[in-house]
Length: 98
Image 1: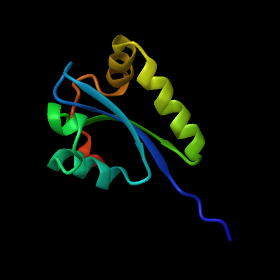
Image 2: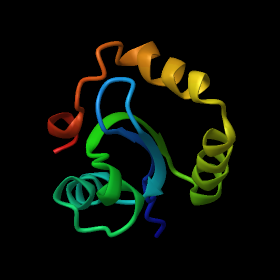
Image 3: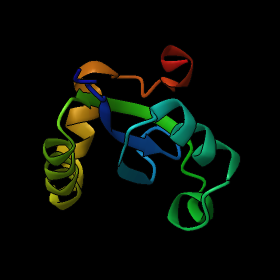
């Protein structure tokens, strides 16, 4: 019996047009909570990057990791366009994933 896992590539922002962070996880609600609460030391905690502004869903972890690595190499403008294609106001999507 096969159990399909779900993986997420996501972008967080400190505010509209603010500092961005790209990550990958298998538990988006928990990971986003940890970023919001400052439970993860490092970049997001240091720069107040807490707002979930974009994410994609994958069933293959290797695909998700490849996508994350590609996005991390993108110019900032491309990341902004990715966010604004579906979230032009940079609303926090936190409640929509609970």
